Structures are given as C-alpha cells and as structure tokens.
Figure 1 (tube, rainbow, N blue to C red):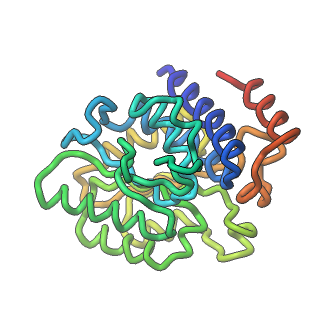
Figure 2: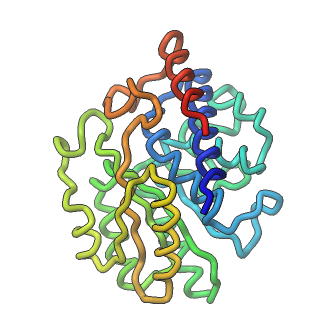
Figure 3: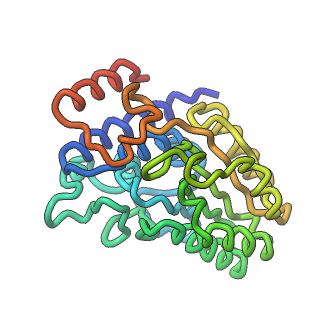
Length: 275
C-alpha cells in the first residue's frame, strides 16, 4: 500500500500548526507534532467522513480528548476541505472561531469542545454507547494523551466501555512520554501501559505512532476486532515535537512558541523532510 497521502497530510498538519502557533502566540506545538501522523492516517485513509456533509449520520466520529493540541485538528480539517485553508490564519485571533483548545462551536468537522483533560474520552464513550443502543454502524475514535491518563475519568471510562462491550470504540493513546512540566516517568509512571489497558478488558494494539504502515495496520486490526465485544486501544509510541530536532523530547516545547530564529529553523527542518 502507498502511504504517500497520509504522509503528505502529516507534513501539512505540522507545517500549518507551526504557522498557527507562531502567529497566534500559542503553545503545545510538541503535542501537536507527536500526534500529527495519527490524525493524518485517520483522516486520510481510515475514517468514513464527508467534508461536504459534516453532519452525515453515518460518519465516524473523532474526539480529540487532549484538546490543547487543537491546532492539529483544525489543520487536518482544513486540508480535508471542511473550511478554507485561509481561515487557519485567524487561529487564536480576536473574533476567530478557531480557539486554542479545540472547539466545536461553529467549526464543521469538530464533534465536541475539549481541553479539560479526562473529559473528551467519556464523551466519546457516550457516543459509542448511543450508537450501540441505536443499532448504528459507525465507529467512534478518540485520541488521548499520556499525561491525561493520570485522570481518574480515563480509567472509569475504561471500565464502563468494557462493561458495555463497546467494540465500536477505538481509542488511541499518544504516548509521547512527556507531560506538562516533566516526563511521564517522573510524574506518574504508566508502564506497563499495554498491560494496564488489557487488564481493564480492552483489545490492545501497540505500535510506533510515526510509522504510517504500522498505523494503517493497527487501524485495520482495530476494525477487524469490532464484533468481538471488547473496546479497542491503540497505544502509539510517539516523540514529543516529532519532526523538528530541537523540539524532540524536550519538555520546554509543551508550552514554548517558535518565533524568530527558532521558527526559521523549525520551518527549514520540516521543509527538508517534506514527502
């Protein structure tokens, strides 16, 4: 299979996000870059969705629970045609509908406003449960952060999703190993993360979250696991700041904004690796 479509889309997500956060003076570029390959694969090749009909009843739903990385979702939606690319220039400006944390208010393609960690995942689970109860066939996807897994609501959701056999529910953990102010390891240890999810009754798939072949294979396995009575989690091992060497694995880039020479250097690296 040719993964050129998703790889190019991931590059565009990173490129737009760099501009958006720099222009608007906002943060979380490291969090956006770590999930860029995940969202690109989902929107390019995995999910059923229609930019011309954002409320299509049969569409798959996608909730970004780590809502602070919202610029990445706005970028992928604009590239898919949900709204004009030019609107990305308004990100975090006065009067813009594109807020820092992802918002559904007036933004086609965004299913829910998120940002308070631990809340997007249970909302997504509710959508999956409603679909099951109504006999609907669409899937519900959700991306959560590793630091977000410190929230009790994540594990309460994990228990409930298993209880109700929500095998139409596919969660991806963006496991970039760094949260707000420190490493995950030095904050609250999560490993063995795959065993934890499995012990809660989930079907677990663990892969390199920047390998497009592995991501495609993981979501193919997730689709194949539907009907087996277990919710599905894809643990994507990622690198915070992936794509720009001086941002990678550096906790500063959870909040830092690239401007001036840093912006120029980041742009040069992204352009050098354009697919």
